[in-house]
Amino acid sequence: MGYRVAVVGATGNVGREMLAILAERAFPCDEVAAIASSRSTGTEIEFGDTGKMLKCKNIEHFDFTGWDIALFACGSDATKVHAPRAAASGCVVIDNSSLYRMDPDVPLIVPEVNPDAIDGYVKKNIIANPNCSTAQMVVALKPLHDAATIKRCVVSTYQSVSGAGKAGMDELFEQSRAIFVGDPVEPKKFTKQIAFNVIPHIDVFMDDGSTKEEWKMVVETKKILDPKIKVNATCVRVPVFVGHSESINLEFEKEISAQQAMDILREAPGVMLVDKRENGGYVTPVESAGDGATYVSRVREDPTVDSGLSLWCVSDNLRKGAALNAVQIAELLGQRHLKKG
Image (cartoon, rainbow, N blue to C red; front, side, top):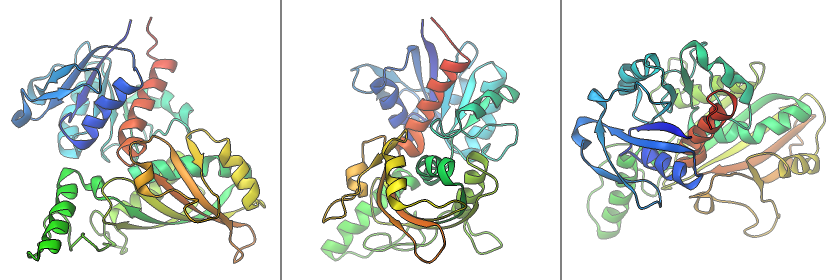
């Protein structure tokens, strides 16, 4: 006996990836519904590689009664309206938007990092999926924190345009083409030209000069991993289609060598250590695309502090940063609470 699962926002990048991963991981579904806005009603979407086509249903009219799990990938505005409605009907919501992440009554989950926190979902029947850049970072940080206790984390991100949705990917493609043929380049989705450029600005600016994306990384890391960790983030959009990269500098309470860190990371769940210290002996976003692992490379000691490490972290933001993490949460929920069969 399986679950009845609704994917809300099924026509978007993350929604399509959720459907693909549900099929890929053989999640025990008796029924899957593809849910989208009214303009996509009736659109057919493939359910992974199963050959089965799902016809999109209108979110405005969809009744969540009798459905077990709803994976939301539709943005905060629609989530604000429909997630509480789904939760009230008895369907557990796993939400990919930022709306509920800092709600004290909603657990913010990365299964490899804080699985026990999922027990708190009963307060609102909602579970939050973290920001894509946070998700991959805490997977890499968790085993190191357990071993030596992280005091301070400074991270600079190199985030792909797919984090801004299909419009972001289209803009990179169109601007690249325009530059090659000599056409004018006009930013639409991004604040400046993204092709052959980098933009140190993701989401809106806040009063202290940081952006909301940077704020998310700070507060989400504290909620998921440890509120005592000091975090500073600089988030940058780069002309890469899929895959976020991060340069991470860590300061620890206890001594930890680069070799010890590599030994720990080699055995850590969800982490793939690739650190050969030779030409090409590291992972870039191109290699991470389509994979669910969080890759760690360039692990080295920082001689400027008593106990510090620097490392390079790469992951497919559409998978571990969003869709895969949501499905892993659903799997964890099934194992611990919604057992069937």
